[in-house]
Amino acid sequence: MHSKALPPLLAALTILLPTTAAPAAAATSPTLPPGVTLTTHSLGSQDADDFWTVHVYLPATADGPVNTAGTALGSREIADRVAALLREKGFEPRIEQVDLPSFADRPAGVLGWTVRLGRYATSEAAAAALTSVRAAGFTGGTRYTAQDGTDPHAPQKVHVLRVDFRQFRGSVDTDFGPALNGMETLTDLIASTGAAAGINAQWFYNRAPGGLYVKGGKLLGSATQGRGGIKISHGGRKVDVDAYTAHVTLHAGRSSTEIDGVNRLPGEIWNCGGVGGDQPTEKPQHDLKCTDSSELVRFTPEFGLPPAGEGAEAVLDARGIVLAVNTTRGASIPPGGSTIQAIGDSATWLLAHARPGDRLTVSERVEDSRGRHVSLTPDTTILQVGPTLVRDGQVSVNAFADGLIREGSDQTFTYNWTLRANPRSMIGMDDRGRLMLVVVDGRQAGYSEGLGIEQTAKLMKQLGAEEAMNLDGGGSSVLATAGTGIVNRPSDAAGQRSLGNVILVRP
View 1 (cartoon, one colour):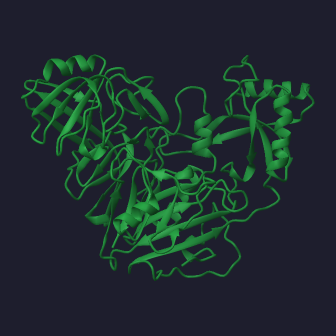
View 2 (cartoon, rainbow, N blue to C red; view 1 turned 180 degrees about the vertical axis):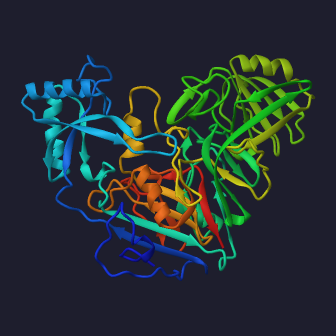
View 3 (cartoon, rainbow, N blue to C red; view 1 turned 45 degrees about the horizontal axis):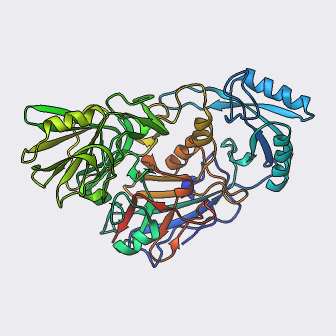
C-alpha cells in the first residue's frame, strides 16, 4: 500500500520536507507475505528556488585549454580564469563554492569551485544556452539545482519494504541469474525464484561483482580490501555492517602464492582495493579501474564460461587435482571444480608449479575491521557495497576508506557521486529488528531529485535503522514485488536495468 504523507517516524526529519497530506499508516499488501509491508512516502516540494543552469567544465590545470575541459569543479584559481574568459565572450558567470560535509573519517572542508551561468525554467532553455556556450569555445552541461544535494526540501519519493521476522517465516538473501557473469532484470529473477520481493544489490563491472561477494558461505567475488560491506545471516534475521578484507591463497606442494581475484577479468580491478602491485593505487576508489599486469584469478562454476586470452591456466577437478595446464586462457570449468587463470609473471609461476596429476589447494580467509576471522558458513552472505550509512544507530559514513573521495586533484567523481543527488538503494535493520529495503528515486526534476550520501545516511537513521548500508544506485536502483512489479520509477528512460546480483525476500 502506498501512503502519500510523512509517517510519524519521520516527523523530525530535517533533511526533507513532508507534503501537507494527512498521515496514512503503513499496511501489508495482499500480494506480500505476512510480516512484509511496503510504503511509499512523498517528501518535499518543488519551489521557485529550483532552476536549470549551465554548468561550465574546467580544465585540470590553471593554464589548460577550456575547449576540451572535462572536470566539473576545480581550484578557485582555475574557476576565476574560466569565469574571466566567459565574461570576455559576453556571458555573466557565477562562481559557486562546493563544500564537503563532515564524514566519519574525513572532516568538513571545501571540495572546490564550480562555474555556472543563467537561471532557466526548463531544461530546453538551459540546453539552448549551453549551445551558445559551446559555440564560444567552452564545454559543459546542464544541471537542475534541486539535484545539487544541498536542498533539504527537494521533492523525493521514498519506497520502504520492511520485513518483520516476528511474522515473516521466509528468508532474505542474494541471488543472480544462470551464471554470475551474466545479467538479469530484478523482475525476471523474482519470477524465476518465486520470491515475493527484491532490490538491486552490488555493482557489476565487466562480467563480475564489484566487491567481496559471499553466497551460502562460498566466496564468489573478489574483495575491495577494507571497504564496507554487509553480512546477512539467519535468513536475514541478523545483519552486521563492517569493513572486510579477504585473502585467497593457492598452495602447490611447499610453495604458495596469493590469488589476486575471484571470478573477474585478470588485470582489471574495478573499485581498486586489490593486492599485489595494482596501479595507480591499492586503496579503494569507487568506480575507478585499477590494473595489474601480473595476476592469478580463480574461477568457480558459478561464473559460467571464463574469459579467454593470453597467459596460462590450470584446470582443477572437485578435489583440486590438475586435469590440464594450458598456455592460453578460457577453458570451461569442470563440475564442482575450478580454473586458475594467470597473466604476466604470475603465468610463469603457475606453469612452473602446476602439472597434470598434481593437487593444488586453495585457502580463504575473510576478516572484519578488527582483524577477526569471519567464518563462511552455509548461512553466511556478504555483500561488499557501500558506503556504510548507519552503525549502532548513528550516522557513520567512511567516505575516505570506502573510496568515495578520489585521490588527486580532480574531485569530479566525488562531487557528482557523493555530494550531488542521485537515485539510491539501501539495506538496513531497524531498531525493532525489521529488515529494510529502501529505494529513493532521483534525477527526475520536480518528481524526485534523489539524495547525496550524507542525506541518504540521515534518512536511514530517521527510518529507524540501527545498521544500514548503501547499495548500487543510479539507474540500477529498483524495488519490485511479485504482485505489483516495479514499485519505484527507475531513472533510465528504458526502465529497469539488468543486474549482476540482487537481494530477494523469499516466502
